[in-house]
Length: 184
Image (cartoon, rainbow, N blue to C red):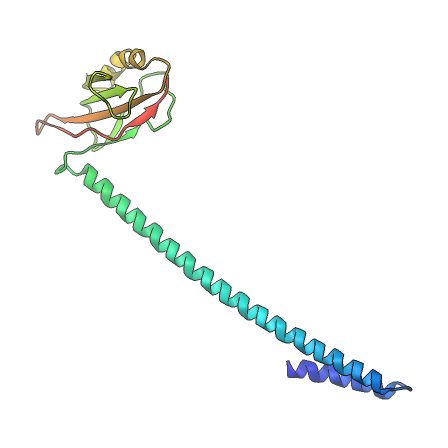
């Protein structure tokens, strides 16, 4: 910065020497202009420094958010593992998806997988007794043959579906899965 001010001062000084009429006012004006340029350069350096600090703070916040995302993903994966472990006898319904519009019997996918399950259909997400249809399904063709019962039960309104996986090898029935809301 000192070199810039010195160069500007030298340029003004040479111009003054070449000028025929140099007054005290001209010299004062030139000095004021030099001081203004110096103040502008200092202010710009401060702004660049502030910008660098702001960028550093944003990078720190982005790092914190990334750490939170990783933590959330770890919790979700642990939860899914816990839900699907055979010790807890849980099942997760992965297909159909929430919001799907069904015209025919869907392909039912679950974790852990099973061809034999109970499917529940209800107008209520709580699957209250009396307001819920339950059907035993032993394979996809059984689902296709019984799907009309589900669509008649639900009518043209949205319906909640859920399942319980049947493990014939260990003679166990899982807890009820997550529910998905579908329409017809």
